[in-house]
Image 1 (tube, one colour):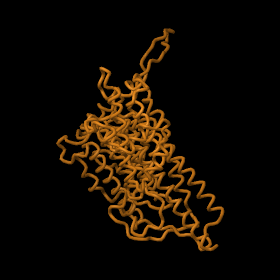
Image 2 (cartoon, rainbow, N blue to C red):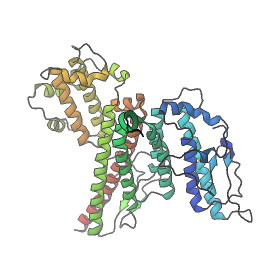
Image 3 (cartoon, one colour):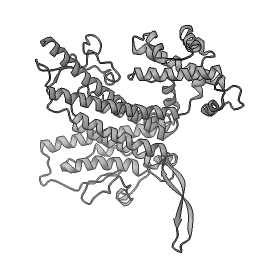
Image 4 (cartoon, rainbow, N blue to C red):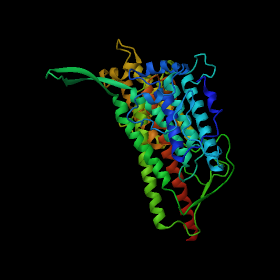
Length: 478
C-alpha cells in the first residue's frame, strides 16, 4: 500500500464515461483482492498480502486469469494498477465539464475510502503496523458490520436506498464475500483417464456451511434491497422530529414499535399519512411487505443462530461460569424449574413480567450461564474435560440426572425468551464467541446474517410505525 498517493496526482485530463466509472470501481476491488488470492488456503492468502508492496508490471492485472464471478478487463477499459491509472481517453480540449468533474470527484473519494478500509483490513485494525491487530476472522466481521453502518446507518425511513450507497454495498460486499471462494474442503472423486483407467482423486468444493448458507444470505440480501426499492410514490411521508445525532447511526436497530417517542429516540423521523388515512390498496401492500420482511428476518435469525451454535465456546467464558446455577438464576426461578413436573417456559416468562429489553437480556445471560454450569456438572463423571466435546458428552449422560434436566429446561427457556423478544441484543456468550472466533468462514456468515437480520427487523418496525399512525388517524375520524 506504499504507493497509495498516486490517486491524489490524478491527471484531470482523463474523461470517464458513465459506464467506465462502475468498471473502475470494480477493477479496484479486483486488483486489491484477487491479485493476492491463491487456491491453496486463506491462511496462505493472508500471509501473501504483504507482497502488495512489491513492484509489478502494469499489465499484470489483465494477464492473470479472472475468477468466474469477476469478468476480465476489456480492451479500452480503464485498468487500475498500483503503478497508476491508465488513461485510455483524453478530451480534445483537455477540460472536463461540471458533471464529469463531479463524477470524477466522487470516483476518487470512493477510491480513497476503499484504500482506507482495505488497509485496515490487511493491518488487522492495528494502525501502528506492528502486527498487534486482531485476527483475520474478527477483522472481516468488523468490516462487514462497519460497512452496514456506513450504508444503512442513516437510512431511517421506508424509501429506496441511494444509488451510490447501493453500489458501495454491492461492490464492497462482493470483495469481502470473495474470500469464501477459497474456503474449500476436499472430497474423494472418481476420474477416468484416457486409457480407460478409473482413479480416485481428491477434488475441492466449497465448505458445506458456506455452500448452504451463503447463497441463501445473498438471496435475502437481494430481497431486502428490492423491498426498499418498492417504497416509491407511497401515500405516506415523514416529518423530521429532530436533527440527526452523531451517535444515532445504529440506534434504529432492534427497537420496539413506539411512535409516540417524545424524548425516546427523538431523532427518528415520524411517519405521516393523509387526513383520511391510507387507501385500502396501500394498506394491503404495506401488510404484505411487512409479512415478507418478517419472513426474511426469521430466516436470517435462524442462520445466525445456527452459525453461533457451531462456534467454539471460548475458555475465557467458561472460566467466568458460576459454581452454582441456582445462585445465578435466583431462588424463585430455580424453584419453579426444579420442582415443576411439566415445565412451561411461557408460563414462567409470564410470571416474571419483564418490562424492558434490558431485563430480558439480563435474564438471557443468567439462563445461558446456568445452562452451561449444569452441563459441566453433568459431564464431570467423564474422563474427557474439553469444552469442545460438551455436546458429545451430553449425549452419553444419564437423561434422569438432575443437572441434565435443569440444563434442558434452561435451554428451552432461553429459546422461548429469544422468540418472545426478537429485538433482543446478543448475549454475553454470543459476543464472546464472535470476539474469539478464528474461523473466517463462520465470521463472514455470522456477520452477514446479523446485519441482514437487523435490516429486516428495522423494515418491519418502520412499516408497523406507518400502520400505527394510519390506525390512529382512522380511529380519530370515526
